[in-house]
Amino acid sequence: MAGNFETWIGSRYVRSRSANSFVSLISAISMLGIAIAVLVLIVVMSVVNGFERELKDRLLAMTAHADIEHVDGKLTSAEGLRETALKNPRVSAAAPYVDGQALLIAGKQLSGAEVRGIEPELENSVSGIAGVMQSGELAALVPKKFNIVLGIELAEELQVGVGDKVTVTLAEGMVTPAGVIPRTKRFTVSGIYRVGMYEFDRRLAFINIGDAQLLYRKGNSVTGVRLAVTEIYASPEIVREVAREHGELVLVSDWTRRHVNFFRSIQITKSILFVILLLVVAVAAFNIVSTLVMVVKDKQSDIAILRTVGAKPSSILRIFVTQGSIVGVVGTLAGVVLGILIALNLESIVAFFEAAFGIKFLAADVYFISDLPSELKYGDVAKIALIALVLALISTLYPAWVAARTAPAEALRYD
Image (cartoon, rainbow, N blue to C red; front, side):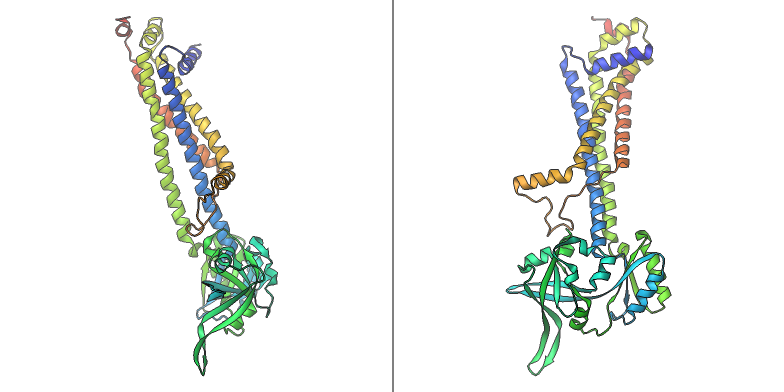
């Protein structure tokens, strides 16, 4: 019964409609502050998680898990290396490639780009390029047809579409009686892809590996072999195993080494944002202190009456802890519910505002990812909610302690 009366009085104080409604207003503001702080923290953490997921997915869509190159960029034993790689049970696919730099020209438009020669069927097994084609097909890259697939940003820069001609010009020249002139070759645009990362969409083009060997005069050699592995976080270990089994002097690399700074910066940013926004939650939770202090001042006579009819100081303490806890719990639950709803629908919300106001939140030429992704992790939600509740509970202790120490005679002296 004692516990019931303490809880009942504490809850009554939260929804009090006494003449001093200002106290109830402060309680509502405290709830709102906690809810907004929790909501913002959940949404921001979800966005950071989304960026990390999208960065990994989009990088791996265009770059293999690992690659092996010859030290001089001319690997003549590509087929032998590929067979060695496929014998490893942790390698799921392997594909040769040729890499080079070129200047792409279409009419009066020009742009530098990395041109990568691939075998379409094998390439599709080590990367997801075929799955991000906007128009045309990767299979159109057949030998000696001199077709080319461009990223959507690069195609827009050159103002070309499927079926248009693009001139590929290399820095290496040909010696003629008239002097040294650059090597050029006209290609037909057979496809356009979009990854959503400006780094790829603007700077990478694909041609058939045989056409690339002719263009860069590599003969039967290639730049290297790209690998897809069954355990992406074991890529460094697997690619070294393959290189040792092959026995030739080669250079090895993997996706974690090439893009380690991206993921490290995301983790650092996530930690900093969590700490900063946690301070916002703490400020909102500590508003409960001022709310309860005002309630204690307002309820001095009530406290005195309860004490005179036999209520113990511990009961008074529990009454105000209950009131503060209700404010914290309601605010936290409201923030969690709203935060989850917004995080789950963030991409649709952003798309609506972009369409309604004609704006772009993330410019493609500035950010690696031009969309605003969101990935809700319920572990993060639970951690945020728990911290908010603990801070709210801590905030109730001092005002409740002050209320428990109230002397009945002093409180009733002038009543």
